[in-house]
Length: 392
Ligand SMILES: Cc1cc2nc3c(=O)[nH]c(=O)nc-3n(C[C@H](O)[C@H](O)[C@H](O)COP(=O)(O)OP(=O)(O)OC[C@H]3O[C@@H](n4cnc5c(N)ncnc54)[C@H](O)[C@@H]3O)c2cc1C
Image (cartoon, rainbow, N blue to C red; front, side):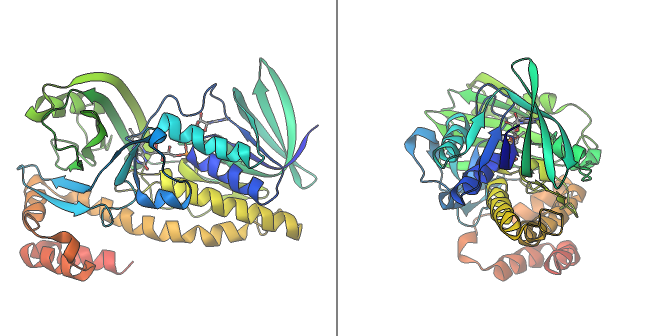
C-alpha cells in the first residue's frame, strides 16, 4: 500500500494550494479529484481580489477582465462606487476559472505532488496513527495510507462527515445561487463589478454582474432559501427581465449551486485531519466569495502538516497550529456574519437610505471611521447595529 505524508481530497483552489505548499515543504503529497477534468463545470462568478497575486502571477490566459471597482446599486436605482482596494476579496480581477484552477493544480504538480483525476475518496479509517483512504478509481477501489488528510472537497464535504467534524449547515446559512454567462451586453458599464441589493431582487442575498470582457458577463444572484418565496432561477429570470441594460444579452451558459454562508465553525481538525475552503465553510458570509480564503487555508494546512510530521505528533493537538492560524480568517468572517444578519433584516427603504447616503461620496477617500460616521449621521437607526459590528 502506498504511503503519503499528505493526501488532499479535492482539486479546487483550496486543495490545489494545500497540495502545492505541502510539496514545496518537501512532503510526499497526493491530490485526488473526482472529476475527470480540473476546473469544470465552473460554479463561480469568478471574481477575486488582487491579493490573489500572493499565490500566483496573474496571467492573461486565466484573466478575463480587470475591473476598477465595485458599484453598489440600491432598489431605487441609486448607486455608489468603491475602488478595488476597498471592495474586498472578490473585486479586482474576473478570472477564467476553468483555466485558473488548472494552473493552480499544475503548480502543485510542478512542485512534486502526485495528481489523480477521476478518483473519489469514499472512506477514511484511522489505524496506528495513520489514515487509510479508500479511493474509487477506474471501477475499482484502492487504498492508500497517509499521515495527514486535508479535506478540500467543497460545499458537500464528505471528509468532514467521515472525520466526525460537525459541518452541518442550517438552511438559512446556505445561499442558493443561479447564474448566467451572458454575451452581447453593450449597455452595461463593464469596468465595474455590479452588486444589486433589495428584497425583491435577491432576498437575503444580492444579485451581481461580473464583467468578463468582450461584452460578456456573469449575471447571477444568491438568495436565502428561508427568505425567498421563489427559486433562485426564477429570481434571476426576473432580474434580467427588469434590467433593460441586460435585455439585449444572450445566455450562453447556466450555473446553479449552493454557497455556505455560515459563522466560522468551532473546529476544523480531528486526529490526522484538517478541513479547508468550502469544506471548512470559510466563505465570506456577506459576499459568498471563497477562493482566496480557501487558498490561504490551504497554505496554513500545509505548514501545519509539515510541523506535525516533523514533531511526530499527528493528533488533533499536533494540528493545533492550523486552528490558531486560521483564526485570522475566522475573525473576519465572524464580523461578516454579523453584517449578513443585519442586511437580512433591512427592508428596501433602508437599503435605499443607506446607498443614498453614499451616492456621490468619494468613499475611497474616507477612513472606515469616516465612512461609518457618514452612514450613521444620515441613518441614525443603524447606529446600534454598527456598534455591535465594531465590538467584534
Ligand atoms: C454561483 C457561485 C458564484 C460564486 N462566485 C464567487 C466569486 O465570484 N468569488 C469567489 O471568491 N468565490 C465565489 N464562489 C465560491 C467559490 O466558488 C468557492 O468558495 C470555491 O470554489 C471554493 O474552493 P474549494 O477548493 O474549497 O472548493 P471547490 O472549488 O468546490 O473544489 C472542491 C473539489 O473537490 C472535489 N471533490 C468533492 N468530493 C470529492 C471526493 N470525495 N473525492 C475527490 N474529489 C472530490 C470536487 O469535484 C471539486 O473539484 C461562488 C460560488 C457559487 C456557487
